[in-house]
Length: 278
Image (cartoon, rainbow, N blue to C red; front, side, top):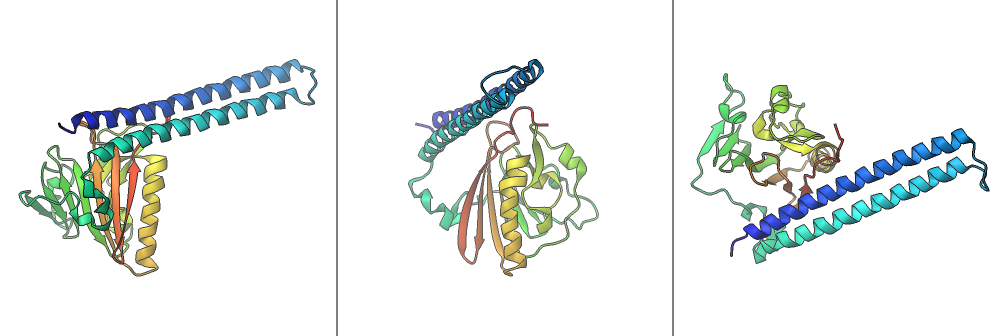
């Protein structure tokens, strides 16, 4: 029996969770607009009732309805997301629980993959920086290793962060031309510019802006920055990226970082931004 039926079920649950969240958010927004309309009507008509301020009473009721809807949305997300995670665990090897203790054993780079060494200081930019070849390992400046799958998508990034640098320049063209970004997505750097991360597409993936790129991932980068600058520690980084079907937008990132021989794993669900996000 293959893992494909389970994989399809997991993907379906993730999609159902995101659709449920967007649906509840849409209903909550409609409820808010309806409440605002009723409040204006009450104020305009100057309705007299047993309450001192009927318009305020209507507004309070509307806020209570929205709070209930938000809670419902959170519970639906948690339920569907948890079910997807439980199913996903069925595909993992029984000894995968040790992954956080030994990240180098996870998705090890096959020996047969060609290694392409690139220098960002070369007079001409290497084509692999913006168009990574499939099934390859691209080593940038001897410091960062990117592994690609058969579609040329980065599935693993490894580096040791030892110092912070002035932010590397952005590549505006690479960011704006990044494929498969959804509304609300940023062109997220796998290795942050402050750690010397390059600006080309090899180091960029679509990340939801508010909760991922400027949220969970930014929080991790803050930890690494403090470890390097304040505690004078090295940070060993190993990022695994997971994709659905043919998209170049990862739906999940598993971020392993090791400081003083202690490894921590953070799983980031790259959920689309709520409907209507610019």
